[in-house]
Length: 257
Ligand code: 13P
Image (cartoon, rainbow, N blue to C red; front, side, top):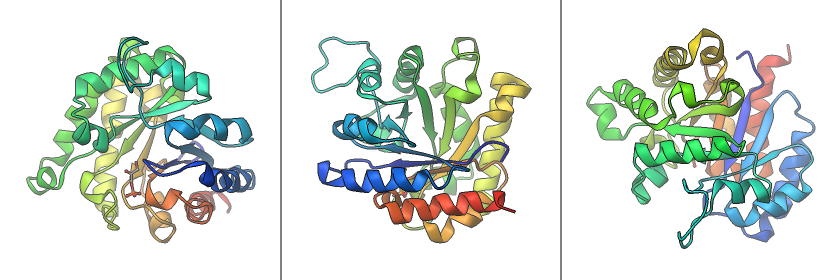
């Protein structure tokens, strides 16, 4: 890893104001782990309260609508999350692709809309168990990413600053069993090659690729030792400061020597 490891907590649909104390604890701990970039994506309702208090961590959203505004009952635009204090947005998570029928085209439109208002994006990709068993995981993820990312000529010049890729195999999410380090290594290297093809040697090599799917303090160190793993997108283990910072600590260790 040439850049600071990026550890992002995705709280999913967890968290009321009672969780603000946990966010505070994460923020305080992040100030002691400056070699790691820690960020939190709480539910929409907690973006502003966390942003208001946070001194170290960036706050982001878990989704946004592709339109700037209009008659879209229940939806939230990129402008609105930015206004609430979000600095980034997670897009194309499998729980949105599956549960909300978001196809690559919608995900791409969301990315364009988020980038247009200055947000950073975390673009998720990942195959199902069935696709992995069929031996087509790498081809699937490359195709999915290519179709979900805006074309290179529409990306900001500082692509590597604005874009992070999160590889999250669906079968590893919330199951307690992360992908093997061999599987992660193979996929991250294929994604790196694609990023270089799309965005050129310089930017393509610098875009962070983070892994998600049952990352916890116990397995984080071995995952971070895999080449081209630039951090983690963490679900369940991000809900307490102790476990999220246990993961952050594992990410900072290789840099302590
Ligand atoms: P878990 O860490 O709970 O497996 O969730 C991963 C994830 O989906 C993060 O976006």
